[in-house]
Image 1 (cartoon, helix red, strand yellow):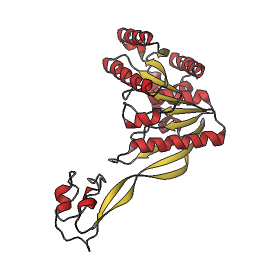
Image 2: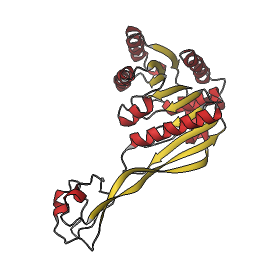
Image 3: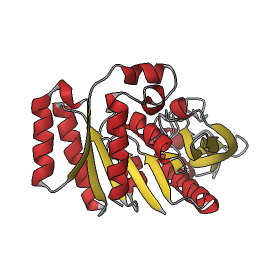
Image 4: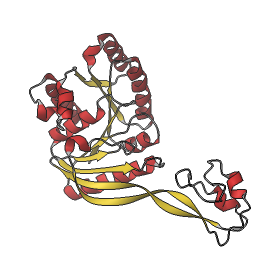
Length: 286
């Protein structure tokens, strides 16, 4: 199977809009929403959940009051202030580091696993979808992204699908690394702003580090053609293929408000036509 990860370097560039449209055009791909901190691909594809899986991402300290002698050592050593004056654990503040359990002279503290989020297998009109949601304030989103990708691979093998389309998280941190490693193509969608150019370059550096084939798409290219020219020039200098330039069109926002992809909502629009061309060029890149 081939794997295509769509990245942005920053939020709000149109990554999920493009991912959903490519899913419609692909028809039989397995989809993976790896933005587990703030997933939104489901808003356009309306998946029907068929399986839910608990994600154990962190641990929680528990104090056995029968053993505790209220010495307060745990409270002194906790750098997250998760132990109250009554020597009780604040579950929200606890980061599960285990220091309190390690230094407790009475062995009154144990670390228990807690559910940090949920992973889902769902069915959409355009294929099966693996996605997840990390609970507020929880960590280890990179591990949850890895679980989503594992689920997507299993689905792809069962369905004999030859393509996985991954909606990656914004930025260049741990979740992005987990969504990018081992894929065939990394498509970076950017916008013609100074922050967009800066984050495009960071995302491309990450793609290069993992030896993934880079592609670039410029969204709303016509809102600042000077910056678009800078992006095109940078890509040409570094031998990076630009697979499309999507124009600004209010129809895209209308489509989102109506819970549809732009290729469904306005299939004859200039944006939909350009996304169709982007899809053809992406297929040629595998």
